[in-house]
Length: 322
Image (cartoon, rainbow, N blue to C red):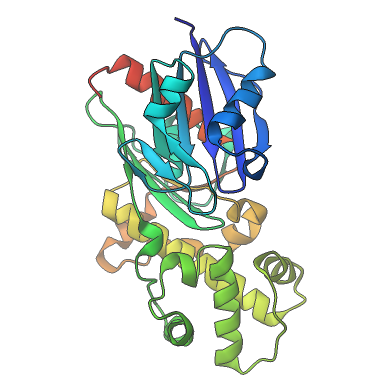
């Protein structure tokens, strides 16, 4: 059997592929999902451009819910079935992971150069590690080292109720509730659409007449100081990110550290470090001191999903009973 493994990170818009050969990840190629009727067509296109033999196995992460090693992408026409891919490409196995499950598997492989520190003490070896990521949506997972048999706990933390820790946050959430009904972490705050909903709600609470803006413009105008409502939005985003990160840290006793991935936070690391993030992270009453010791980081390394896919495959190969 070939020692090559197909790795893939599949989103609703883009699909990224790479081949791992004897533990070394090759160049990552980006393809547009809309350009291919099926994932099988995309894989064939990718493999046709690669030198060397075909892969013997595949590990793919998917931005969606997986049941029985099968996923239907929410924002795409692709249906991804591991058993079907194994048959099509003569693979010994084709395993599907949730996208944040793959990110969770990457955590032990991250190095100090891959991280931007956000305060706290030092990590505890062998302790759980939490990763969370605001981007198009919000994801979270926890790496659990176990006793020689690590695993990653997948969550739906983006859909829990957004917490309020101040009267102003309560007023903003109340405004959002008028439009959204249930105000979740993802829809209300920690995602691109969450930033937009927070901006609109702050403007309504303050009686400010502001134009419609998308998340990218709100963030930019906050950073350059040209819009007070945008600045207030980004400040509230940072505080909520700290509060939610602290909640997840306590949930998993994640003394191995807290890691912020996704597409938003790496755009303004210095601003986040100066913000209310750390105070809100630690603001847990009798557990303030516990959280004060736990470090938080922004993950700055690109393409960490592929590190996670590699880690998962190697761990699974070493533990056939998984």
